[in-house]
Length: 116
Length: 112
Image 1 (cartoon, rainbow over the protein chains, first blue to last red):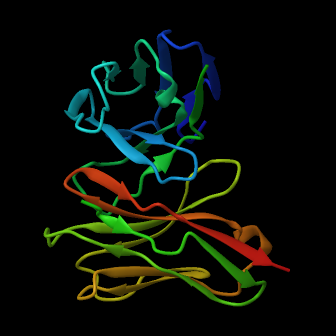
Image 2: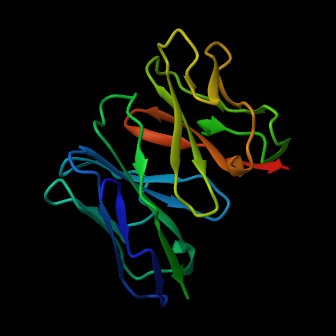
């Protein structure tokens, strides 16, 4: 497909389990971003990749959150020992270049994570 | 510190009328980008319009225009001739220092 693809669309996990969320960006897009969106709120920045390099992870809420993009394309956001406050929609976005502030981000449909 | 402020949690507009959604931002960097996104109830984020900090003219895209007042640090979205399909959440965002900062959003309801 031509857009950003995220999987799974929905994920339910028990508290304490580990989860992995996948993002397949638009082909050729250099920059990839992960966001966390709580219900009724705007997306909150988690981390940013330029190709395979994770240039900014300042938004990751704890060391239970880990993201990677080993080949500069698909990215995985992993959450270890999930807690109820991790319940949110996780959005992935990609853009052609991260250095130019005029590049819009293209978003996937998100993964809705529910922790029981 | 709050980078993007949207002061209208909810707005109503009559179909076919124009509506303005407010957005103010805060940055000390002279180079930044301002964006508006639409998020329908289905959840996808749809890019609407972009304004660069050095752009001299206000951006327009079809029925969307951005009222950019740099000195006031405001970037209001104007939607002309509202349609029922415009009912959604609208987010203002700023790209600055390799990050996107989003506001808390405005929920727009278009009444028939």
